[in-house]
Image (cartoon, rainbow, N blue to C red):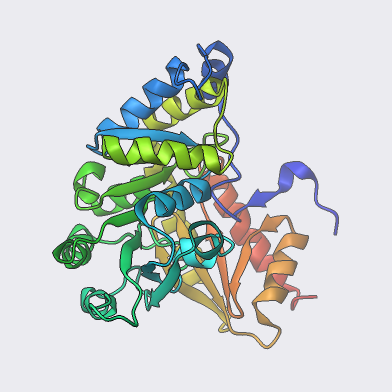
Length: 350
């Protein structure tokens, strides 16, 4: 069945949003300069606001969250060291083995199905003083946790993990791509949530709705060293204030993420109450909804059928689909999702 473009409901990710009128106006009017020379006033203002928002000394603008994460690892470690991180973390799972290829470090992975490794597991994973062992150079955490279904990691849990690392003099980097979603869900100010981390990355191009960009925050010394690594990775940009301007608008409007959370709750209720016994709700957190389909045809079949009726989503596991709400969706789109899902099953999946 052909689907007109205007009928598409895109639940694949909160990266699919388009810059709104306010962002486009700010981009058109942005004052710019050469950022490699640190002469772009709009970028400098964005970095200043980001650092203040997370109560860190400095911040650095990056084209993407992956580049910012990898620059953080490069800056914190030396080749041959070991990095402790979750087996399902974005840095380990989705960043093309950047740890090994770019930084020359070894990954020590721990279970993190609930969004974060156990502090005692971290303690046991830290290498002792033995001629056979690599040096543990960094602990990486994630909040919210992508592959666990957007789970926000509580402040006390993050702190407990950071304290284990601090006891051994090991720095902590936080992949906080959606840290403002976590902040809203936990009702904890973002600076309070990340205070025990040495460096934090967050994205402007996910729920915040900017067309691109991420910020890396930390101490002044750390950010100056990261600046050189950003250049090494090809992230030195010129008149990038036209993009940073959208990021400034995004930061001002970050409370709008609450609407995404509310839409996710409604979407989850539809899935939970759906009458087919093979379909149910695995979990819902922040703007993530995990749909579980245990029918014999598998989640890939349901993903395809949804696409045929104009609903786009991503298969995460053989039995699970990931659906994300975002600023370009309204309640009517969630209602339409319910109608189309019902249509698929009322026709017996034909």
